Image (cartoon, rainbow, N blue to C red):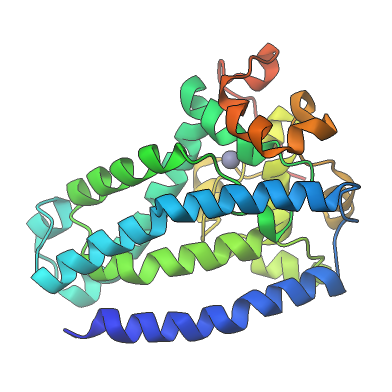
Length: 282
Ligand SMILES: [Zn+2]
């Protein structure tokens, strides 16, 4: 097991080499929605943000911290370490906890007004596709990394679990943002166990009740468990107009406007005040 980071890195490199072109292919072969009328302006802004996000290195920092802890044989002092469970039980529990932490952090981004100002850049994309995945404000890194490291340490998450979970989570994020119309029967079955493109696109709806739902990262189970799931049929997902009403101007796609967006004042409905209401699932 001591060489786990090496074989994990090799396995994930192969998965990524195959997954990215495959996702691009299905996005163009079976799109759920037509492309945005200004695709190049939109893509250039999104890809520049993605590059900034990578440059600051959220994944590199998180995986680097986990790999260093693994090589040093360090055990985080938190809950799971204290319980000293056998590895075969601790690892699946840790993987579930990691996904629950993602759900909780995402929920916080929607319910804390300051965090929402950072996160709403992701939601203001007027179209959802592969490039939306990393349309994140660079400042998000300074919240994401310390928050995760603190919570993971408190929970005593083994570094190996992080090394497995992070690439899976990123792959599912890419998959769930793909502009892809899955066959209805497949999507209905799959959304019981995985966050699918239709499950996630509801989260990109401008309707507050839908924006504040479907927070899941890899597993949709937390949304089902905590009552934040909003299930919609394929026709609804095809017809919804992703984005936020406050940022529909085509000039909002330029990079400088994207970077300054957290400081832009908007009408109260896109500020996070109060709790969202829930409606029955369809
Ligand atoms: Zn969100």
